[in-house]
Image (tube, each protein chain N blue to C red):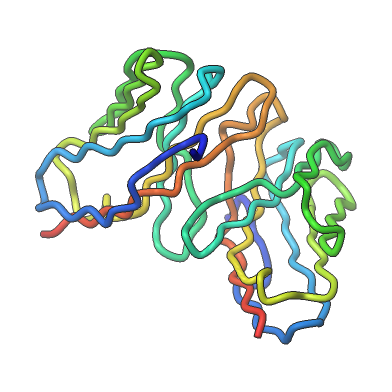
Length: 110
Length: 114
């Protein structure tokens, strides 16, 4: 079993839809949870950073962490074609390396 | 102004050759990394340098040798290239090792070994 599981998709939704992206993990010691966005032929860029459990909101993006279920989510409201990208979850224990999910490829159709 | 830049963007070479990838960051960060992204998009750390000192070496074959001449530069030299080395290699940096969750990535080097 991989430490971090993420459905690679692809996921295709119409413009304006609410998008839900998810990762599950097995290591209960993970404390730091991130979402990176990667456009085609580009490097990943940090989108959201969360420490421990709870929600974090930034504009149209909301990150949720449920440590009891070992489950994290990224919600995108009012999705735009410019949101089309691969979204990678990442997580780490304190003072340890980051572990990335496989990434979910998302397409927003105009 | 590109924050983390790496060259070349594409590298096509024959098996057995030696090649290098260069990386530079102008963010003033202390820590730099090499990551490898395979064909299934899994991103895995290879090396990390903090202020020119190697701090992470993730069981990478010793054909891969990183070099950091100063904290703004981290190069990757690969000897005796193999087919399995084909991947996208990303350089990244963070303000320091404590901020390693907040990575700034370069655009990647697509390495194809024929």
